[in-house]
Structure formats: structure tokens, C-alpha cells
Image 1: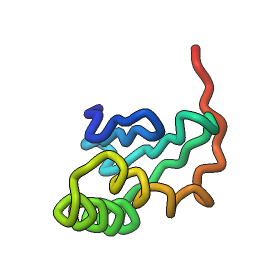
Image 2: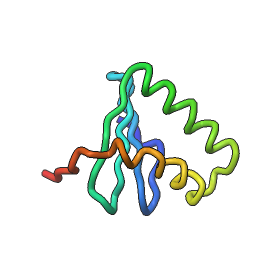
Image 3: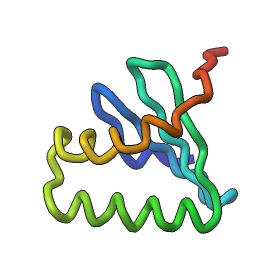
Image 4: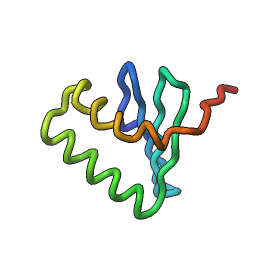
Length: 77
């Protein structure tokens, strides 16, 4: 597990063994898990967004697009 992005609003975690990414909206306490081809496309899109502007505001704006997918409640143990 590798945290590849962390801001006040979002975090993105990579799970290399599963070839997947977890996206979490910290304020809504909701997330989603992407795996396989979807994960590949997400990573390429995120790399492109970061290459345009690596500021937290810009990357958060990019991640805002995935809010509709973040339906799983975050559970703390």
C-alpha cells in the first residue's frame, strides 16, 4: 500500500499487489476502489492532470470528477 496523493480533501492509495487504487473524499467519508483497466486509465489521467498543474487545488479539482463513484462509506477500525 502506497499513499500517492494526500490533501485536505482527498487521498489516493495504490495497492500494487492488487493493481488497484483507492480514492477517498475525506469530507464526505466516502470512497471507491478502481482495479484493472479502469485503474490504468485513472492513473494515466491523474499523471496528465499533475503534469498540467501539480498544485493541490488542481489535483483536487481533477479528483472532484470521481465523486459520483465514491459511494462506499469509509469505516475506521
